Amino acid sequence: MIPLYTRVQLTTNKYENEGGCIGMIGYVIESYPDGKYEIELANKEGITIAQFVVTECDLTALPEVGRKDI
Image (cartoon, rainbow, N blue to C red; front, side, top):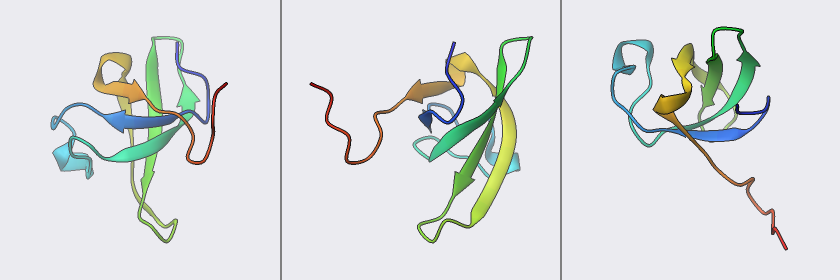
């Protein structure tokens, strides 16, 4: 399970029609009982460019920017 507000990267191109391509980075903004996640992708200015529901196998969790795990 991926916690809410986790930084994630898309690992597939199957969401191109929704505005998401492989390698794009966003955040989990909702999780659903069926194991799916709603993610939000934004540009460098922080403006949302896409928001859609994905499965966990379509994501890789990433460390937060500037965070150093010790």
